[in-house]
Image (cartoon, rainbow, N blue to C red; front, top):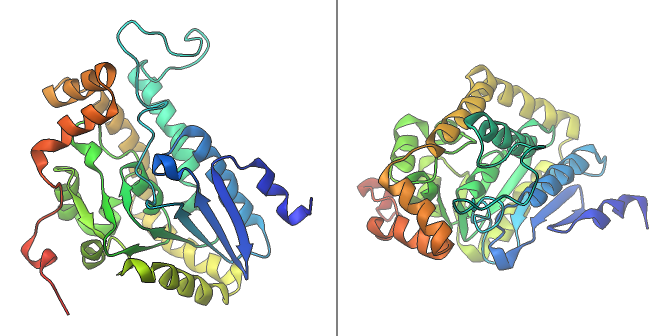
Length: 306
């Protein structure tokens, strides 16, 4: 196999392609709405590192196959938890567990964070192309990219904040400011792509049929700039975010999420019980039903403009 294509052999959950200085990395679990698993995130880290290392790549596009960008973490898989008295599928005497101490929880989430933070740390710019659902863990990925372009009808938010925890990757503050970050997280309500653009959460929102063209054109324009120059721009701006506390906030967010997982409030306990006894679909329905359509309502935000 050609050396430039050797990376493709290792992908079970991603597609990887390079053309005209643009690497395209595609989350490829459309039947699961591109829900994130530890294996997928490890592949994503490796793919981003591969793109960053290649001299034929100046910019990266991150997208999701099918109707959705990413609906979040795979709650029906490794994040589903276990029924009372049920043993996890590994030796608890040898490894930390997902249902262990608060420090175990922090440690496990820090390992995940090391995989997702790659987009922020890598030298080359990354554009997130967002369509359909971009929820919970999906926002963790998109908001660590350098640009987000969304369809106007994309649904973006963190509904898990209603009863599951606080985002362990906390970049909402840097995108929308403190009041809107609180408004979104304290209700778990979602934003339409067109409204996310008005808040500055995404760079632009376009009709769904124009999304590919908008993303490809931005990538094309960026790709004409030398990689060294692109790196200089990205690293200066990201360092400014670090000076504002972005790195420290990520670690603190993990610790607060671990603390939130210990919450014994009625909504948290109900979700865990529903997951264990009736499954994900019922758990999500019971969690979200009181919020109606779950979309952010604000007069100026939802007002139609020319």
